[in-house]
Picture 1 (cartoon, rainbow, N blue to C red):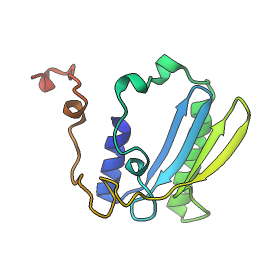
Picture 2: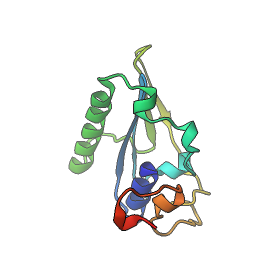
Picture 3: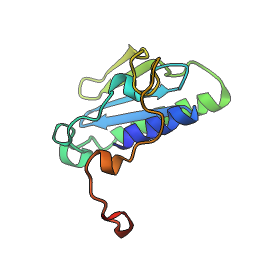
Length: 143
């Protein structure tokens, strides 16, 4: 749910989201920039069921992978701040560290995207604890 919350907040605030993800021996990085390319929901409109998306703790992650993807995110952030170079807006860079393969995929905005499409249906931040049927451990959020 965090990825969706960050995406939605960035789209509503019209701010770029320098995104990275990791899983086992693979990592990805991109920049979701409202009005300039797709958002996270263009690719993944709804969160998957919890049992289909294991955490890094459950699935494992190669120890150096967060650093590798983090450096890419830092570089993209610096390029955006300075207005220099070609950013990863509309592109997804994929790293497979087992085969040492790097691929770049082109991404397109989805006109039917519920967040940034032609007729968006999401116009405010969603309460993700309620949306995902999570129970807050904090007493202030208890029912």
